[in-house]
Image (cartoon, rainbow, N blue to C red; front, side, top):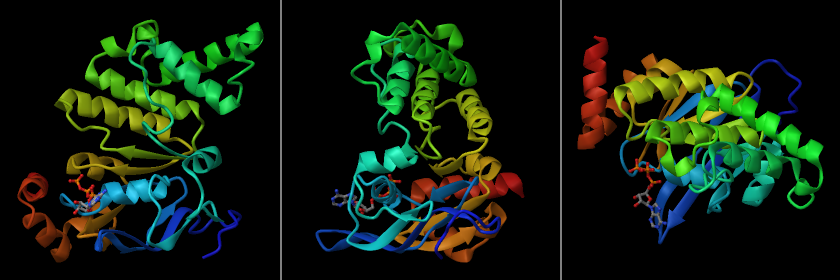
Length: 270
Ligand code: ATP
């Protein structure tokens, strides 16, 4: 479907057609066709080794596909560079916006905002520019509830707040679509709830693609889910559709660690 962004129905922010990536003859991603609606929060899930990370790397151009096409906002970006796709508004958390541990939270977000405005060289020349960037950075820090620690070195922030800072630096480059790679990994129950609340707050006018192993998070946050197994899409739809799909259940049951979480989650919801 050629998408000119003028139709209200089925406007896809990101589409792939028959996307594949082989490593030494093994297909890590095998004929994946995704349609991610503009403004949706879409999850990519699957057991270990399903191809989720490879897919993310293809979408953000860290890897080139063996075959297939990728369209972002109707533009064929298959052969684009990582920085070109960032400039078009497709940004992966931790991609451009690496958090520098020895800079403060404010300095980190200001640097990311500076990059977006393309003022890397004349930045320090104008006091007004500096003030504008400070204001932008403070607004973003407020959005992610980090304003109170803006002068703290990133290295000294607790884990959950570091993830929030990473999200703020991603937001600073003004993405239209954000790709979040396991944003709740390694977090306590409270930390998970905080990140979920944060994603709800910042997603407003954005499209989000999220790789997430925590199925409660996926269920609570995502409008649509694509399930991968062995590089292929085995199911797509809302949570209740995919969670009842026999192929999905089998894929999770075949992968001990993940199957346990899917099984437990289903029981919790029974
Ligand atoms: P996990 O949930 O464990 O992170 P995943 O769904 O992200 O898994 P991928 O990391 O994309 O899965 O891996 C898919 C398959 O591709 C795996 O079999 C993996 O070993 C293989 N693979 C990924 N990257 C490479 C690479 N650079 N070279 C060779 N094989 C790779």
